[in-house]
Image (cartoon, one colour):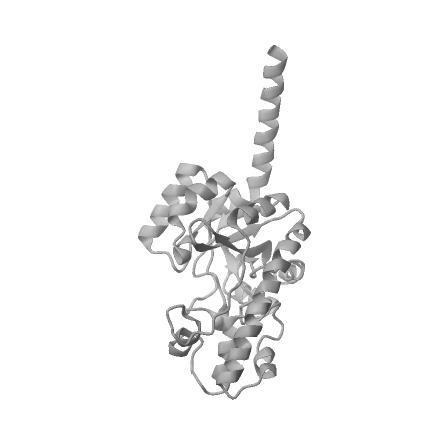
Length: 295
């Protein structure tokens, strides 16, 4: 059973809608997916309803943006199977507001450099909960200034090293707060693609914060990195997950749905994780009560 546990839709920075994503999964022979839009839970219920129609299991998920202030690095955390996802709405809204401010600034800068209107750019973000860099680049593609989303023009506008960049700061919550909020909502916290932001050195710290697992299988990870992450998970008894990080047309590279998946053994462990933790907690409580009685 193929399970792609990292997929994006038009609700954030993906180029396909929820139903289209599910149809692609069904026709690709993928039985299970997780819709993990950036800081957005809006597609969870609809995804599960549509998934049943097509025989595809849709696991509730979200990819939460965070920042490790100590290390000075971005961190993304995947949350799965939250019991009360509404408790994450406040966190998502704060990030969304900050992202919207940054997006508006960048959009105005683009509109001052190129003969495009802000309305033209906004139209390319139709259906999304926010304005992402891909939407701005898509508008510039349609205006004839580039033939690709990620390329020379993208680097000129959005690379920190570029003297002509239009970047505006987005404030993200601290990584510990994000993990705490996930657990407060009854969810499972998985470190997303540590290879993308080079989060390797910080994993031990995140485990202390309560991290439940790591996304081991991801398009950005080499065979050596997959092996390294697997050993880390084994040492810390963490869950292992995998996903394609599918964005459709808006991806940084050509990635098909299901190109990276979670093996059945590890999918079962993810699905049974919370029940196992509850059993272990009840056992620990019984042992503590017995010890207290003996004393």
